[in-house]
Image (cartoon, rainbow, N blue to C red; front, side):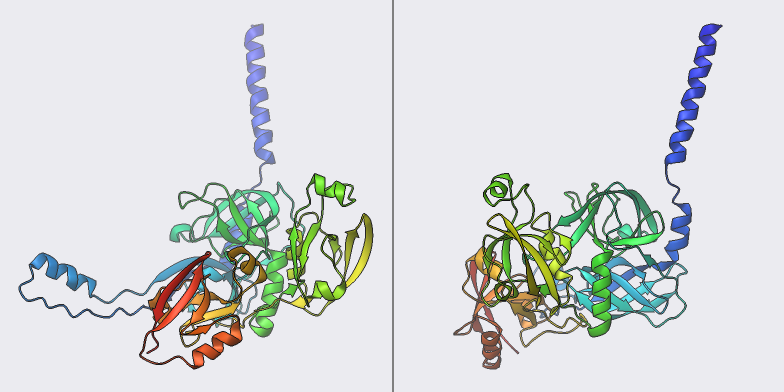
Length: 456
């Protein structure tokens, strides 16, 4: 009897513990029900790249080959894409990812009540992968942003979006890390990403990431995957970046970022000891660009920036994240360690070179069908280039697309002209002949490539 009693007590104890464990788990039902109406599904249709119809002398060609060539000569269908977004205000402003809407001719926004609207692009910011859209509607449900820098590792977060086109799907997880550095293909690093284990899949891009208070803490942007699906590594743009991007896109249709003009590296234990630091921290200045804001302020190679504009710089990647959010022209204080002693330096933050007006994404670019910008010093160093212009966008159905150019390529020669910077490129465009192939040389990840390009 005593054994039976102990068994009953053990079962009851297990049930109590299980109930307590369940009570500690969050209930997401109210959060999802309240915020889902502010989330939208985005479908885009891009330009059709025209393919010249081949003149095939069919003659006595066997039917199997005739069918093959006739199928190849059929017009291409316009490319389409899908993603998510969310209303940030009741008057129809929508935040999403740039990669969801880039190169889109037509953007359709679908609400939870099945209403559909055509959306216009207010502005895009490829450097943060954010885009601001607008639909013609009023009294719409909208989200609330969380306080910047209030998120902590271990917090529960919820994503709502349309993975694989499955509308208004919700998934939950915890914040795995904050301030992740993921440099772009151009070597730029302006976003301190939120890493979480929330299940994010294709179609979730541009959707909101909520905290337990139902406030947006980030914009789902990227996943790390070997299979194409979620493996528990997803990354979101934090609200601190999103709010600044939204304000600038609304105001002027583009985003201007702060620029310092330094090459930096992390400080390890050995470097910390040699530089007079009590512990490894800060951004070590490896090189200062001539005539840059850092140069004008008196920052030197060998300095370690440990604080900038009141923000502690713990790792090298913290510096570009901080500087990028500061408006060009603003004066801030930097705390540096030089020869073992701390000193305060006043810095006037500059404007990031090569910023382009990014209002809208449906243009055709320049004469070749390109959007280009100045080559960064980091790219010059990485690819050992003395000059050139970097391709930001290759628009469809253009001479550039026909020549096989890709975003990230660096154009160094056009015709007989060497391209060192944007002024050289613009001058070469003005002299390009029509209906005649000209030589084009560009660098693709450090490898030199020759092609021909022809302007109709």
